[in-house]
Image 1 (tube, one colour):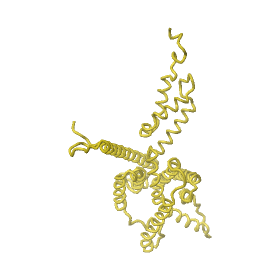
Image 2 (cartoon, helix red, strand yellow):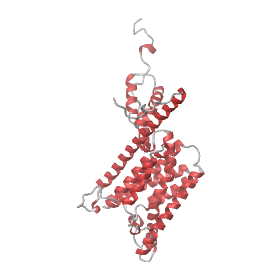
Image 3 (tube, helix red, strand yellow):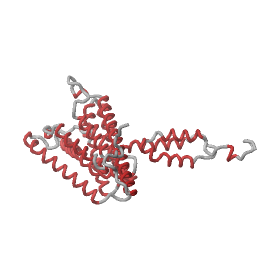
Image 4 (cartoon, one colour):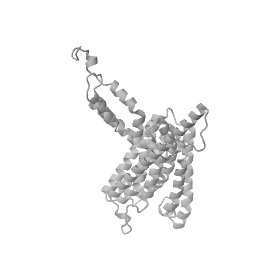
Length: 367
């Protein structure tokens, strides 16, 4: 029997190799860790859904895969597995509001003072032009309140609006010639984007309402930090005759004094698997805040007030790169922990004990 006489199911392959090749190329758009865990499953679903005789991915399949890959890259700093994202979002649900509430309180207090001045007899300054980030912080406070009372979907929408308002404020500042103000506000906008990402990822890895203990811890930590901020700044503010929320009252807080404990805490968090999942986001955010208050992107003879769009983009780009590098390091630490756990389980199953001089999984050995 010739190939022409054979049945169609035998003469023609069910899945053209060119279709498999194109699907694999599209799947390379996903982050490596996520692709390694889910590539076979995704490829199987795509091939099962392919029409008979189809030789190329359809336009809808390309759009869906591109959208899914974009979503995974945006959520990549939180991890690629449900376990990683559950641990990361659980910690960041508490820690991000604790960090962001400091600037939110200062900006909203300043905005309230501007409103009082506008309502006075000689008031004329527009609030949006004077405090461009006031809307961003007001929306964020509403998003946090909604998330704490259990309105997760509405809270996510408001958090996305807050992040969008922050990006718009940066664009307005740069367009108005206030690039240095945008340079100072950029880390806080990154924090708001991260908080929106935490709420979005939390819906995919946690079923049901947030635990009461988690919400109570968030409220208590935010109140504690605000109280500590007011108490620490009140003495300087009273001595200098300025409000507690002004930058003058916090001038005694130096960058080295703030950076040292942050680095120690992040380093300690890497030791435990559950806490290390939040390190990439917190580390990138801490770096952005540190750089925005330093002269890293300037020479010693150039004034900081000469910031431009390039400085803002450099700050955001370096923050993104450091966040991804930290996520890569956390993934490698997780793999090492899994290898050692499986090695110990294997030894326990076989009843054997490792020799004192035997190498451990993940340790370099001489060749």
